[in-house]
Structure formats: structure tokens, C-alpha cells
Image (cartoon, rainbow over all chains, first blue to last red):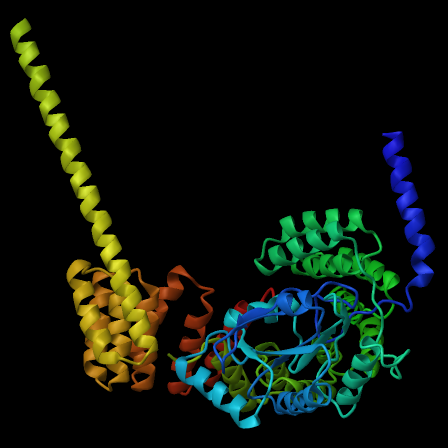
Length: 374
Length: 173
């Protein structure tokens, strides 16, 4: 037992001594709830909607390629801009080991006609990289995509290096910048958005992924148990604390969630999802003013993180600042007009504002997404 | 007396043997029937996805011969009839299905959809309220009930139902 403890101590010491070698503070990519830079990317596979060939991120990584995964939707104007930008990037870097997979997340279920339309669309845009359909939005859920488009870039061993949220004027440049660094064509990135991340140990990551699957299935208690194992296996891995906070909120234990989120933020001060979660826990425990400060600070750095937008809008409603709430939610709707959550909250604000006609229409828009006509 | 007892035992043994064989045969028949139904249903779903509605109707009729209480058969038959714009037959089919399988909320929801599209809110409400009696948090049913009240120009009630439907749909997300 003593021998085992000595080995454990040695491993931890070696780990902490090697910490300075890790270049930057780890951060989570704001586009994804459940991923962080430094983690191995979950496997992405499917059938290319144009060629019918099987596509798999694992096989690309096996061949030492840098992999770019982009989640996009037909109805999102910014997605189209991002696809076009990636098409240009693919051409610029065509002799480099870079592979791109576009994952369409239009709907959980696509009819044959809809799939045909997407195929036509891809052919029209002349996209040179494969596009797969995310059946039942499995990848969308397991990656924890917040809004579309969302892009994640890995190095040649499949470790996530960068994940820009949304598509802004600088996204193209950020992607090119990160590729130049990953390809060794540049020593350092020009942008601070690109970071090395914290790579958790295998056991911790495995239990985290198990916990995530259980959380998505609604098996919260079992998820928490797996998270305890993940945390014990690697106490410095921030993601399990964040997920723990999320689950505790779902179990109506917002006070406990506050602690979990604060630990996640302590491990990683740039952890956007944890900061948003902390804000939500503050709101749920009645600390509305603190929640507003927390969330406004977060959104000033990243105004695309819709969970934070939604919580802040709820804070504003509580404070009777309905105009601010409406403005926030309408902006969020621009980022993702197929989000029933955003529409639901927007409808509630209209209802609170006695704008019943708008409330009804907004609710119907949300419900039509959840229950499409047969 | 001993002889009588012996005969009784033999007769009972034979009866038991026959009933076991019969039960086994019935079990085999049921299994075969289930297998055939599943296969047909798979074909129905594929044909529906391929928009081959005439094929769907013919397959469903075969399915209903094997399994006259198959809720999925009534469901897809009704859908195929609506796609071919034969709403009257669609409604007759679905009502027949509901009368045979009264616990199928799926059939009632589909019927309600059609009644709402046909602007017959009261008929839709009958089915929707019967579902909500058993499952008061059924999100899609609450949504459709909201649409019904909207058709009846009761915005307040519609609003309440829509809000409830979204609340139950999105809790945990």
C-alpha cells in the first residue's frame, strides 16, 4: 500500500514539474459545451452525402492529418459563409495534410427530399470536402454544440487545438493562423484564441465520456458517480467539474452546483461553459445581481454563448428589464433561429410584456421545430 | 379402483401432452405472425419514406390481415391517405384504429392533427383531452390542444398550453 502511494506521489510530482512545459492556460472552446482544447476529439463518421463513401475522422487521424470538423445547417447564413471560407482554405492548403468533414445538423430526422436538397446545395457551392448528415443529432449532442456554425480543429494526433464559435469576420483568419501553427509554418499564433490545452489522463477522459453519455440519457446519478471517478483519476481536468455542475442544476441542487462550477473555473479561468454555468447557478440561488455581473463579463468576451444569453435574459426579466431581455434574445435568435430554447424564452418575455400575439407566434415557431408536421 | 386410477393417469398424461403440443404450435404461429408483421412494417416504413404511398396502402392492408390490431398499420395507412389527399378515408381509418386500439395516443394525436387542419377543433379536443387525462405532461398533446384553442379564438388558454408544452419538452435541456 505504501509502495503504491509512493508511486502515485512520484507520478503526481513528475506531472506538476512538467506543467510549465504546457504553454498556456487551458481553455474550453466556447462553441462546444462538452469539449476542451487538449481533449481527444470524439470520433466523427458517416457517409458522404455526395459520393456515398464512408468518412471517418479516426482514419484521417491515423494518417497523421490535421482534422477540421465543422457543424453547419442549411438555414444558417453564417454556416454558408463558413463553408465557403473553408472551401478557400482547403484550396490554399491543398497539398498539406489537412482533412475537413462538414457535419450537417439541419434536423434530427431528414426526409429523402431534404437530404436531396442538402446534396444539391453542397454541389452548388462546389464543396470539395465530405459532408455527412448527423443522424438523430448524435454528434451535435455529444459535442455539445451551442450554435451553428461551430468548428473544431485538431492536431495530427486528434487532440483538439481550437474551436471557434459562430462565424465572424475574423474566423477565417483565426483558422488559417491555427493551421499555420499546427503545420509548423509558424512558431506562434498571432491570435490568443489558439491555445494548447490540458490533456487529461486516459482513465479520467474515459470516465468523463461515460458520464457525459449517461447525462445525455438522463441517468444523472450514475453520471455523477462516473464523474467522481474521473475527478479522482485526474483532479486537474476541469471538464468533469463543469459537467457535475450541469447535472446538479438538473437535480435542483444549484447551491452544490456553484461549488462544482467554481472549481472548474479555478482549474481553468477561461472555461466559458463553466462561467456560464456559474452564472446560471447564481441566478437559480437568487443571487441575481451577481449573476448579471458574471454573465455580462462572460458575454463581453464571447457574445455567442447562448446558454449565457438565455440565463442573462432571465435575470433581466426578474429585474423587470424586459427591453434588455428582448434585445439579448433577438440577437441570440440571429445566431440560431432554430433553437426552441431561445424561442421559448423569447416567447416568455413577450408574454410578460403583455405582447400575447408575438408570444403565441414565437411559441408556435418553437413548437414547430420540436414537433414538425407529419 | 386401481385400474380406474391407472386409466385416469394415462388419460391426463395424454391430455397434458396434447395441450403442450398445441401450446407450442400456437406459440410458433404467434412468433411467425410477429415476424411477418415486423417484416411488412419495415417495408411500409421504407415505402413511406420513399413517398410510394400506393405501395404503403397495399402493404398496410396485408399487414392488417395478419394483425388487425396493429396500431402502426392504421397510423401509416392514415398518413398515406392524407398524402394522397383522401382526407375522408384517412379520418375513417384513424377512427377505426382508435376504436380498436383505444389506448394508442399516437393514433389520437394523428387524428387531432387532421381535425385541426380540417378546422374541426372540437373533434380534435375529444381525443386530446382523453390523452391528457392519462398523460397530463404529454408535450405534443399540449401543443395541439393549444392550436385547438387558438382555432376557437381563446388566445389566453392557447398561450398557457403552449408554454406548458415547451416547459415539459425543454426541461433537462
